[in-house]
Amino acid sequence: MQTIQRILSGVRPTGDIHLGNYLGAIRNWVKLQEISRERLFCIVDMHALTTSDDAHNLANNTRTVAAAYIACGINPDTSAIFAQSQVPAHLELAWILSCITPLGWLNRMTQFKDKAGSDREKAFLGLYSYPVLMAADILIYNATHVPVGDDQKQHVELARDIAGAFNRHYQTETFILPEPHIIGTATRVMSLRDGSKKMSKSDLSDYSRINLMDDPDAIVLKIKKSKTDSDPIPEKFEDLGSRVEAKNLITIYATLTDQSCDAACAQFSGQTFSTLKNQLADALVNVLSPIREKMHFLLNEKSELDKILKVGAEKANDLAVPHLKEIRKIIGIL
Ligand code: AMP
Ligand code: TRP
Image (cartoon, rainbow, N blue to C red; front, side, top):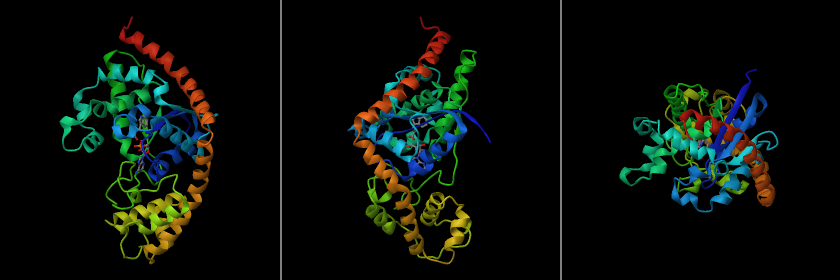
């Protein structure tokens, strides 16, 4: 079995943490615990500042994401769980890296284009340089693998390019080139209201996503109201063709029940989506109820959570501080 040296990943503490975050990222991190030597799971609160509304209630959102990591199965005794802001080396390295990152590379980032909207002149610098801070999050620890959903592939590839640029510029081998680690069947979970859009925290409609804190009634209602079509389910997944909403529901069901999308299609072949929706809602309630209950429990124990974040930050600083010292020496800082 493959052994992975060092994993780093993160979630922005903005709004509700949802099924896309779970299936595309956190669930994979839980599985990777068994086959990796070291793991760092960050709550990227400095990244949350790039979308100003999200900065509202940042401390509590940070605790909620920490609670979600633990409730989903990340073990804080064997993985470092910490807030990005508690390890200042991320920010210093981000500046250093920004001095060797060509604008042309940032101009290619599709997430900036999406988030900046049509009036780019009004977008903030932090949103534009967001991927450089993300590169620093990864490179400060020399993480070898970065398990993320499909939407973050471009950012991890940029981190790889920046690492290579630094190594060439200073003729060193300081940075390991990190690999995006995009695994599982649900690398891109789509909105329940529009199968062409990613499920996201920023969608104004709460019916577009299943939140990890949703209770069973909300889950059942959201699945019932989710967009589908009236055609029967085919035997094979590829025969769903351009039925994007149908594909999304099958993919979610398959992932939750640990089977392939073809196997899930075969299970419901010839039936309509109302049958699938009932079983999907049951599967979601089964998987998410214990997570929701544990999150509530942890969020009632704020001081315990804060202690976990403190210990996590100590572990992270123990790795980051000496690496930053080495980097400062390479670039010739007094
Ligand atoms: P974010 O909520 O943007 O901070 O994302 C945190 C992690 O969840 C990243 O690894 C994302 O790639 C992943 N993620 C976010 N939304 C989705 C989605 N709709 N489908 C799959 N993965 C997602
Ligand atoms: N940009 C990521 C997202 O929006 C979050 C993130 C920030 C991250 N730093 C990271 C993910 C480092 C992995 C590694 O989802």
